[in-house]
Image 1 (cartoon, helix red, strand yellow):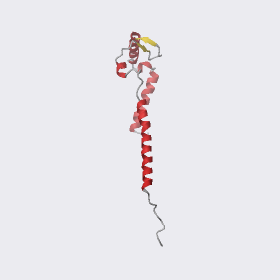
Image 2 (cartoon, rainbow, N blue to C red; image 1 turned 135 degrees about the vertical axis):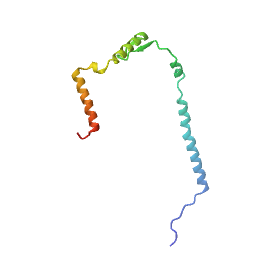
Image 3 (cartoon, rainbow, N blue to C red; image 1 turned 90 degrees about the vertical axis):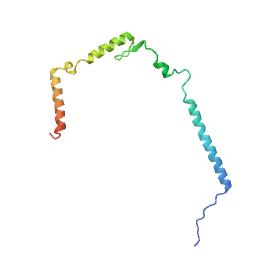
Image 4 (cartoon, rainbow, N blue to C red; image 1 turned 120 degrees about the vertical axis):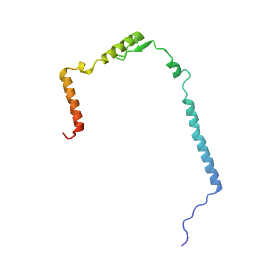
Length: 117
């Protein structure tokens, strides 16, 4: 029995066609990349971040309701809010609720030490 499987020979003319097609596809594939890089630039009227960081703010928005306020009103509101935060949480709840919270914390601690009880 002879060798029935024959490998077709590639002619040099076919290589030239394949090379031309490959070069065309490579060049065509590079064109959108150069077009996209030009589109990624910011518009000329856009203010750079370095300039925006140096601006001094003369108005602000309230962190509570979002209304516009002057800088002095904003500072006063921030002082009032920080003073309210300095109140301990135990003073903000009734004694019964504080006792329940302490018992729940104790239970959670004991569950870590004795997980099956």
